[in-house]
Image (cartoon, rainbow, N blue to C red; front, side, top):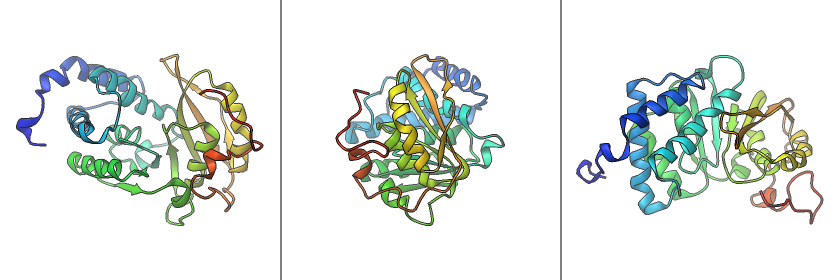
Length: 261
């Protein structure tokens, strides 16, 4: 998009919003410099521009993007394993328009980031954004988690897997845990009040080599971080073939469905 076609920055990203982003990140122990805030601004611009063609997100208001996308993504650092977060290899499974992976990379430039997205148009947007923002050590994987989770190059190679994809926890665990090395961690930002969903996922998590940890509460009482430590290798049978995990979630008898999420 030509610079002359872009909306005025004064109308889409004010100093108040920059300050709110910096303050919100600081609450998670992240310090954002001027260049990083500029890149968040640029990311927002690209998101809105491409959204007119590709329907990347229903959330476009600057304040809502800041809170529901940027800060919600950055909250994942509260569940990162101990040590230097800049040294972590992280995969974002079902990243969509880049959440939470790209905000985490903008805040932690040393992060080794892979963005996994099955939809080709979204993968094209992600590749464009990473190039536009000049983000090094990043990879876009255009494919399905069920397939790439069985590829040796990616299987159990990441310190952290994150996912904000809209799926129940047992399904997300089957998508994500095969990518995580033993000693690593799977993090799922979720709404609160999903105790039955979490309870239902415990058997699946155990089968996949994970151990459910206590959830991490956030300042927003409607949001939490579900944390799963990888304690054993994932059996080679998982993830199962494409489309099967959501149809037949692990640990649940056939014909038994979850209630509304």
